Length: 239
Image (cartoon, rainbow, N blue to C red):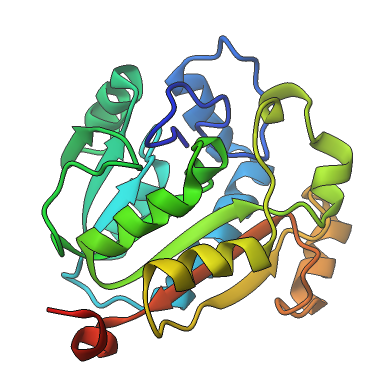
């Protein structure tokens, strides 16, 4: 997860890893091959997918794509995905491992025309953007049908155990209420939908059982997925 607007993000592969700051893009991406990495990746991907329910062939911008892990996952699900990142090393790694279209740029000033994509996602990349509300406005500008954010939750065991340490150093932790305000300010008449996950972040058997039985409406998971589908609002906020 490389942020779209503030330079190197130490959580490039995923915000649940504690890899060293000097780790390479390949080191970060390899984390997804671990049992815990696969588990968390699946949770994040499916949480965001359910919010948007895109159709095969739809286009998507992955803002702050980092090593391209989620770019690849959305591509594999049948979408036409463009990855954007501020780091050339991450873009180069993503291009070599994922293929497809990538661009360098900032989430706060996306280098694309209005409504260039059907959907726009940012998977924990806004945690390192200085102006997340501005980035969400940019995401809404370039999306035709909807957007979704993956964020670190202040109200979670993950925050209590990891905030300010390792790869989390410098990350901003948010609440669903704050993110809902960003979306509703960016998209008039939009209704933000939220789910929470990764309630016990260790990834062991107990964590997985808790994940299966805990409703996503309980706002205590380490990962917040929040988004809005707004193609039906064309007549409200302009064509």
